[in-house]
Length: 398
Image (cartoon, rainbow, N blue to C red; front, side, top):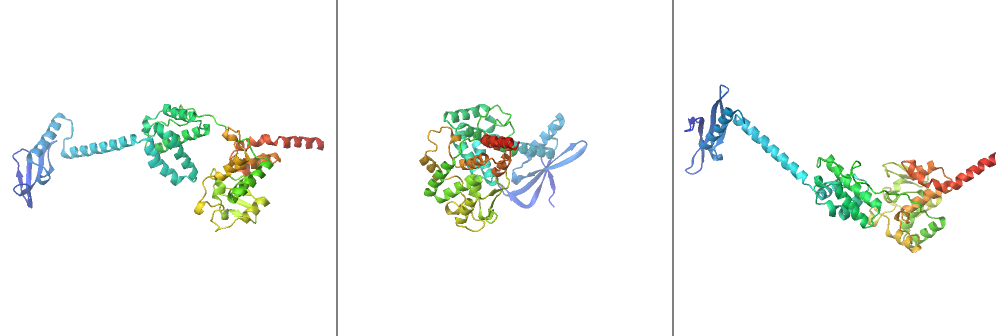
C-alpha cells in the first residue's frame, strides 16, 4: 500500500499511485488531501488527483480558504460543505436558467410548440383547433406573437380588437380571438409556463364585443323545396346532408360524424353520440328521411354515411351549398351575417317549423339537443298563432 507523504505546505499530504503515471517526466500520479483541526477534532478531506489538475499549491489555497472562513465565522468550514454549497449554487443557477427560458417563451412558441399539439390530442372537433390556429395566425401573432407572456398586457388585446374591427370582422370572430388567447394563457398557467394573471380572463380589463348569435332567418316551405332541388341538381351528397338537417335538426358536425352503426332504419331512430356538450341524443326519421337513407350506398357499420374524399370525414359544409343559395338569391342584400342562409339555417328551420305547428317548446329543446331552455326560447315568438288558437279552443270549450 502506498505511504502518505507530507507536502511542503502545512496541512497537505499525498500518496503516490503504485503504477499510474502522468504529465511531463511520466511521474507517479499523486492523490492529495488536506487535514486541519475543527471543533477540537482532526478532519481530513480528499481534494483530488494530480492527473485531474490538483497541485500542492491548489490544495493549500483550499485549506487557507476554509481556515479563513472558520476564523471569520462565515462561509463553508469544510470541503464537504464547500462542495455541497457549490452543488446547491449550480442547481440554483440551472433552475434560474430554466425559469428564464420559460419566462422568455413567446406566445407563438407556446401556441405552436405546446398548445396546438395538446388540443390536437385532446379535442374531439378538428374544426375547433383549426379555427384557433387561423385566428392566431391572422390576427393574434402579428400583434403579440413575438412577445413573452409576461409582457402581454390588456392594451395589446385592445390592439387586436381594433385591427379586427377595422377589417370589419364580425364581433363573434373577435370574441373567438380573445377566447383563443385566454385558452393559451390558461394552458400556460396549468403547465407552469407562466405565473402571472391572464389578461384575457373573465376578470381582465378587456371588454368583449357584444354579440347576438340568434338567427331569425329560416326557410319557408317554398324556399326549402327550391333549395333542395337546386342542391340535388349539383350534388346528391350535399342534398342528402341538407335534407337530413332540415328534417331532423342535426348539426353539420353530427351529420359528418354519422356512421351506419348509428342508424336504426327499422326503428326509425338515429343515435347521435357525444354531440355538442359531450352528450348523446336521438334523432327521429320521417318517412322521407328513412327513404333517403335507404337509397344511399351502405358500407360497413363503422363506415361514414357521408364520407368525404378518400373516405375521410368531412370537416366543413361544401361550397356547393353556398353556390346553390347564391343562385337562388336568398342572401342578396343581406349584410348581417347572422341572417344569411347558411348550412346551419337548415337546423334552424327545423326548429322554427316545429314551433309554428304548435310543438311544445320543451320537446323542441330535446329534439334540438339544447342544454338550456333559454337557447330554445328564441323560437317561442313563432308559436303566437298556436297560442292564439289555444285560447280560442278554451273559449269554445266554455
